[in-house]
Image (cartoon, rainbow, N blue to C red; front, side, top):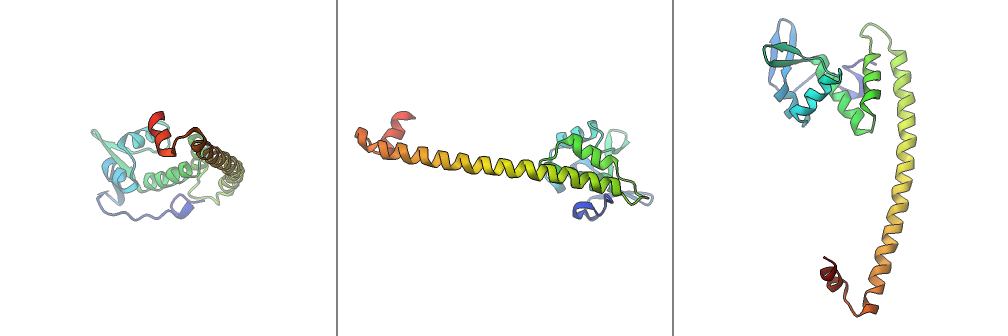
Length: 157
């Protein structure tokens, strides 16, 4: 799975590119704005070894590869993958290989995450039914106590 093409990653950006030789780099603020993440989050991903920006003095310069990795990190987080799993997947990337091992790992982890999410979804549906019943029961009982629901709410608050 190539980092440039995986999970619908593209190499374009809204601007703010910095070129050094043939490579295009992005400053931390540019990536922060583009992906709507905090500077702290980008530094955290760097500390965890997920991103590896170059340094020019105190300035962090993120390559197109870092940008693609960030997009994958954010997708992985959105679907509930732990950072450890995301790092394992990204570290298997081989720009010269077929990445079959990486694809197998993504499939395995994705299937496992789908199972977790489906179980959570069922639990949430059950909790919503229970909560709906509780609210209905309380609303039904309030008039018996001589209170309108909005009066009970004021007394409770």
